[in-house]
Length: 126
Image (cartoon, rainbow, N blue to C red; front, side, top):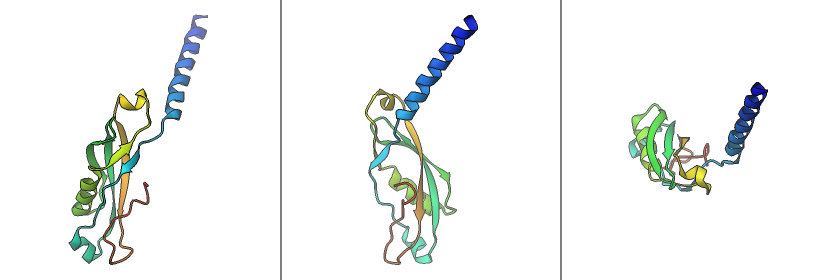
């Protein structure tokens, strides 16, 4: 009987934990600062994708950021970091979102589609 009771409690707590996770929606950017190619890299045709690890604080602001995966070029990585640190995020309302930070990996692709357009592409995230 004691074993059954312990099993039942574990099952109930696991279900509550899973239910909380299913209801959560990831933060979505409400303000996205433009990321621009560094001029010299744009002229040279250097492309790449940087993946930036972002800590989103309870107010929707960006906390710590770090390069999760480099584009292979430090200047492209720095351009991605500088813009993302100014982003703002919309968070789902409720206590669960306001008690601890949320973490995301955001890919920033630097691709030259048109020689006149010096903006990077966020098509993998937005």
